[in-house]
Length: 366
Image 1 (spheres, rainbow, N blue to C red):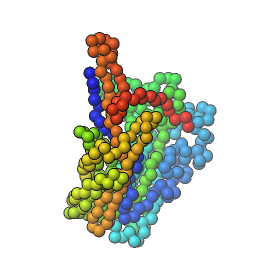
Image 2 (cartoon, helix red, strand yellow):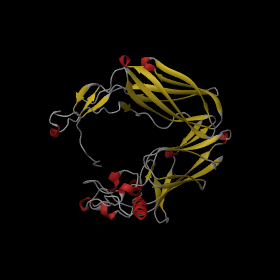
Image 3 (spheres, rainbow, N blue to C red):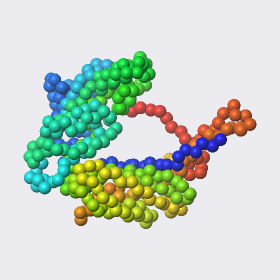
Image 4 (tube, rainbow, N blue to C red):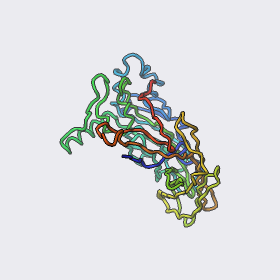
């Protein structure tokens, strides 16, 4: 028996937040402050960063990795924390049609306020956000992020689940030797932060990815991604583009290009105002014009630049990422078809070559 896994490869090494807007403030370059919810602890914050780092540099705690600090500092993730900063919008931004808050990632459960207006609630460490700001103004603006204790939140969600469905979701807590926190399966954050094997429990809180404010006259190219599949001697690059627009655009020209192999696809779209627009398109790439991507030790990890350009209102907005081309099959045929009790093979064919995959399970040592 042969089980063929869907032949696809996702490379998003340079995928992420857009590089083109009409002006921006990288808020992670500004001075941030942190405080406990009751205001008893205050200090300067580093963004991106986390609460343990900020408390350490503010001399509230010693090195979390020293001695028994993993136990002595358990009050930190049980506390609600607030991060805040101010930024000034200059007068020459008065013609800006829209302002977007570009959040790379918050850890984890948080309410975000701009000038005391609630603009975002987050429950997932691994999600980025692009949020229109309505209450921005020329001059000083105030951004505040209120983080809820991850320990409290996870416990609350576990209790709500048990009340609704009448049972718990194992494991409720890690084994006692881990000396970790419970209910990690009810919060979307780094699982190792609640403890993992010999690693200590440090459920972090904070702004762990870049954060910025984007001023937009026309459009803002938010994200691009690509999935590569293989069919009948052609690789199919399925490209997904996310564009946010401040105005109605009836006609915009989009170009998808792989310049190294002289392949491009050009088409037109319309863009709705004050909303997130998703554009999807495919590019066919002949198998014989690309160099295959190979696992480490089996060949080169060849990547090709994919450039996405959107031309509208006399302006060109672009972004780029890298993609690789490979095929993958998981082989699970019988060791002996006449004796199925002997079991099955389990190996991968990568680019039609059998490859032994190996690895290790590890957590961060620092």
